[in-house]
Image (cartoon, rainbow, N blue to C red; front, side, top):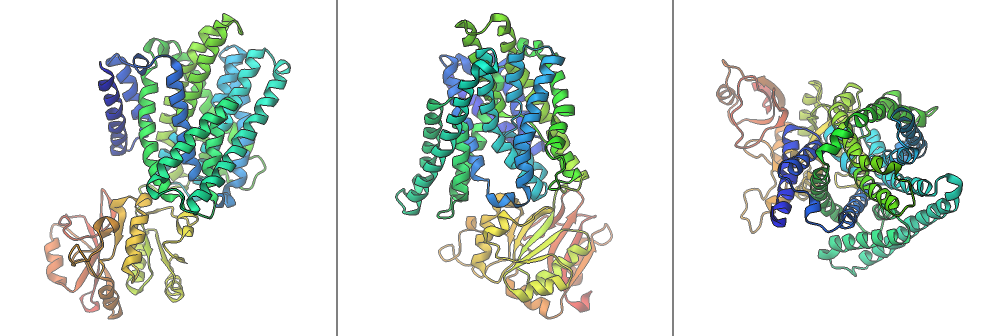
Length: 606
């Protein structure tokens, strides 16, 4: 197989795995690992066939992980910590310590591993990571508070685990803690100094460069990509494995400065993250040999069971002992949310190679040579097992605990006019989640008097996306009198709800020529058949219109419905058995029997 064919296959299989996972509603990491392992076994080709030496691959993997952690840091806002700050700190300090010692004890005293390998794997396995956490959170859609806890822990704990692995490796090479004390203190000091100070200095320089427009817009994303790579390389040159901390802190610092917006950069990094994850998991899983996997299968499964059943629950409940910040149900969910990802795989590959070099150089005895070769397949089994277990179990568990909603179809209305309140009231009476946002105090007050959840806020404010609880809401309809606000809000929230679930009321220029109308890609989908505009809907409601709920049957077809109500109605929503609540739209399929329709009609037709 030529290098071009191999790299093309890696890219194609990576994206195909992402699509298949989305289609089948499976954790994408599982499909990626399966495709990568299959490529390595059946095609008989791995990345090692096309690279000279392991150092090239490990350097590339480390750089990719740094970019992922930087992108993850850009999503972390200090405002998230108002409710979740204490549990995040406890999990990243006490939880890490408990996980490390329990994992070490399990490997040394239960599985009989040498203390050096057991301690190193115990340090590596404290990590979770954004590569597996982010896709799961997108799939589960938990409450904002618990989602923030999991997100912060998953990103912050990665550099902590990498630094801990460095310290353990120093002890393993020295033979005991006392002999390595000076090296450990130096490593901790340098890692913190380089990781924090360098990151904050770079963040301030980037902020000033962007603030005074010293970098053209089209270079923003690639400039930050280059800065991230440089920071990673410089940090690692000063102190091994400190680059991950530098990149994470750099992302957090940029996300929380107030001078310039980095959201457009974050969108680029999100796309890059998907590409990197797809390629890395295919490449790394393809390197695992079937024989090595068979040899590590029994200890790997034993370790996996202990991590899931003992280590993670004790770490979560132990870290939050006597804490009132996290409820019992939230701790149960956190106990079932610790999948390992690319950081565990990458760091394991690095230190497995370091152990091999140490054995060759005589710095460490040959008695652990065989065990060091088992590290990579062992962690591979843990990654597959934890992603499969938590990926398949966490979503139904979150729903059972009341921390998430299955297939959320509730509606967020950007606007609380008269007709909106009528529609929202009908949906709420039937058990659907609704939330109304409006800057008009009277509209919000009337909505609350109607028993609706309403907040006085601008749909375009940072408050809505960063702080407002959107659990149970899966669709957005922008319904303000201002067409430009509707278009901007719809375009902005596509990354939250997905383009198929973002709607807006037909604007005034809906039928205008493309020279004078707003471009279609800058809008949401136009809702409701015949595309009525805001003024028509508001006037219809003012004339006394009511919401009518009708179920289509074999006897009472959609044609009967249209004949009875004629053109004096506006079809708003439909409910089907397979998709649930949906916004009605122009040129949609004819509703089949069993479909429930919500329409705004004249009171005399009710």
